[in-house]
Amino acid sequence: MEYQQKILLLVTGVLVVFALYLALTMTSPGEADTKAAEALLMKAMGFGSDAKDYSYVFTEVMDDYKTTYTIARNGNESTVEVENPLSVKKAYFLNNDTILCISYPKGGNNICSTVQGMDDTQLYMKSLKANLLSDAMVSINTGNMKYLIAKGYAKPSPDMTNGSVGGKQCKWLSYVVDMSGLTLDEAARFGISTTSPKVFSWRMCVDDAAGYIYEKNFNYSFQNLQHIYDYKLDSYQPNGAGPITAPENVNEGAVKVLFNEREQQSKLAICYINQRGAERENCIADIALVNRNKAICELAGSTRDRCLVALVPLTKDITICPTIISPSFTDDCYIELGGALKNSTWCGSIQNQSKVGFCMNVSKPKEAGSAPGIDIDKFLNYVDKTNDTTNNTANGTGE
Image 1 (tube, rainbow, N blue to C red):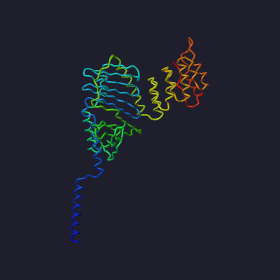
Image 2: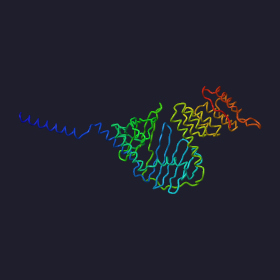
Image 3: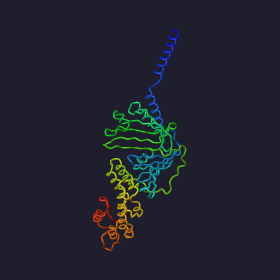
């Protein structure tokens, strides 16, 4: 009995010592998970380090406004291509020249011009070049994230889950960045003003081995609107870029086209950022008409068909009407087309027979000395009365 008591006391003592050892050497599960998430987050911040020759394609969507970037670098030369709903622009950063090419409206002529040393394009070209991967940018990103975590402004969640993006395995992690308590110096460092949004909720799926960010997104609230940003890595090939070749037919004109594109692009982006619902759709449709671009009408939601019909007298594009979904707007489209081309043949495609007479009337070739076009108000009133849907009104017939 005495022997058993001694053994029991000995075992108890060992267990106590072992428990104390665990308490001193191990962290809590939550703390351990947080450190793992922080480590993966910092690995993600290092993406692009030591990148010299590569091809890189990614897509950004801000409040449904989509931009795709295609980047290639070979030694000291590189290209940055940016495609948005309005245009395609491509910058060539060469050893002995800087060239900008632009196709605007998208699908139109591609114009290339030398912009090296031009003051009025310097800022924009720098913004394009900032998309190149660089050790300097990686250093800034990692330094900022370390600072935010150390100060408690960035708080990773301890929960991470396995995921897949585009067939590639990754780990989802999330964190919140709250800059509400920044000092004045810190606010200046991160570009945060008194009116800036300050709380951002982030998620990203990171390749645990390579540190590639296959997808990341954040959301925030500003001026009573919710905003959402989403990034996807379409492809990244280290050592995958071939020689950078300058474009042929470099001449004048790209800068002037760029200024026109930037003005309209800013207006379109504001439609997405500042407006929602019907206001956004009407705003987008207005941009489509200014640019005479049917692709932008596709972004106009419930006003898509109305937008396409309004383009017909401006573009005389015979491919538009077959793409319209609403039967009533399809009829209106053929009225517009007949009037724009002064060709009554198009009236034969109208389904609502009550509209055929009006179409035949506006499709008559103009007589010498007659007033140009037709009475737009008269046409709108006519459509109001004959459309099956009360609010389906067309946007006038003219040349």
